Amino acid sequence: MVNILGHGDGCELAPQDNCWGLNDFLTVRKVDLLFDMHNLPRVLSGKDKLERRTIEQVRTGLTLANQTNTPVYSLDTWFECLRYPLEEIVERFKSDYFSCSVSYAIAFALFKDYKKINLYGIALGIGSEYSFQKPSVEFWIGVAKGMGVEVNMFGNTEVLAIPSRHLYGYNTKQGELKSG
Image (cartoon, rainbow, N blue to C red):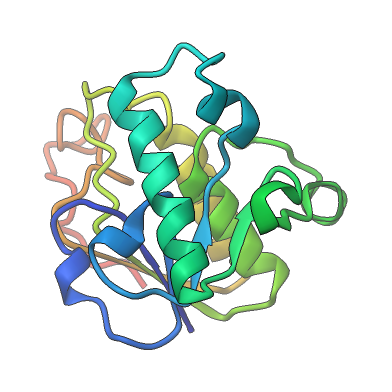
């Protein structure tokens, strides 16, 4: 089992063991592994047009990871990061649908053959700045479920939520039917 933690509501519910965080998650609590899938040299040099807050989050995350000896997976081996095995994962799953770090983390868990993935604090709200990331997270959850991997979500989340909250064509609210 692996626990993937985001900054949203519900991250405080995560257990202490086998937890992976995103970007600067070490500012919240200790995790065993981080994913920072930014182009780190470009972000830290200011060449990317990112908000100053994002640049500081990246810098803080890398600093804390270094201080706590927390492994960080990223696009390449810069700043003592581990190189994310993108080519191997794309080859194995025949997909390169990655629009955020959560997608990379779920695919990595599948690549490492975890049979249970818990998502804590992964909100990805409909209509928010994260709404373009939501479909790829849902895609990788679908891949996981198709492989027989148990996926659980904790906290307020829009992941796998229908905007209308009703099943298309039915007068049934999403969540009213029991799913296996």
